[in-house]
Length: 314
Image (cartoon, rainbow, N blue to C red; front, side, top):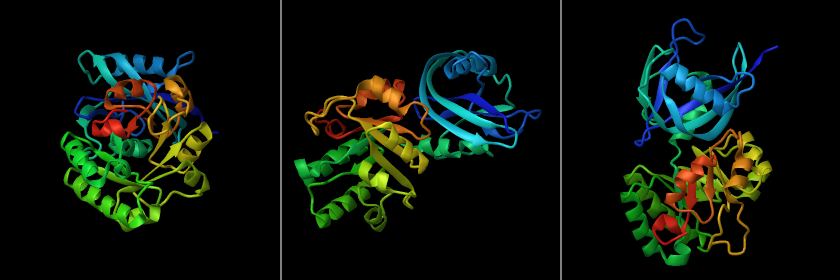
């Protein structure tokens, strides 16, 4: 019987989005492979406790902030591993390669080392998912105003846009989506079409965002590079994870103008619902870019927003 092992793993990040990898030493299993720093959770430890201890032992650093992120499982020849990933954006001390043969800072979309440990493929893709998703609302403010706001946001660094236009006729929505796509491609930003996987593929979109109802009707993942879904409870989140979607969106975390009267779940419930999920989750509902740090501490990958993404409030 393959033994089960709990491991704490650190995605140590810098403000430019780069993260630290270590190369396994010659006398270890999978020697020469690259990995995220961390190690086994010992008896009596929480995964976070193990993370703090391991980073001190392996790298000689002190963790100032560790945000829960994902939990992935992988069956190796020698063990069934449950990997508890934390993002570590704040730490102090001088990095020391105490157990690794080498260390390197990398970007998820420009990885230049390998091979990576087999369990890390989905982690690298998750790190490519931008931390802020902006949802369009041209049906409310007009196409020209929305495209002008999009130009401003892209110039300021926005990297992910969901075209969500329930009030538009299909032909007008498609034309608008193509205009959004052209602008986003100039800035290297992802574009997702809300609600229609087939049309997203026809229009050349990067992916599709599904409603919870559409998600629950699925038995397999749509064949697009990026697929995500709106979720409202743990069962929907687990279904999204089972289908290996690239992300889920959960809320509303705070009261929101787009759904007046809908009760807000708050950060504690968000954390409880997303705990140890295998895919990244974006928080939505009354949020703005300045909420990103609090969202990460609650276990969110990032945030999704409508009005605040375009400078018009939450």
